[in-house]
Length: 122
Image (cartoon, rainbow, N blue to C red; front, side, top):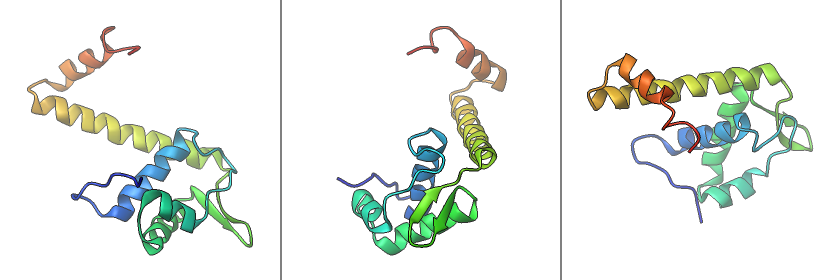
């Protein structure tokens, strides 16, 4: 079964986000070889050209590297991975605040809500 894509954003960008999350969360380790474009395309149920475009984007971000005759691997540059993780975390935090504000919470109330013991450790 393929990955689930939303209609609001181009598929290749959603693939970038999916693989980026896999990298920063440790699903793909630093230096680990990625599945082939064809295998990733089958897994995601997308055209190989779409997958290649997403991987090219990740390469331009410095998160993956192409090694001649070896395919694509996750970078061993831990600083690049950390920066991508921090950037992704900031996006998630901003989206959380935005969603809470849509519910009528102030920024401070949203932060307090997040810090509450009930929210932790689910």
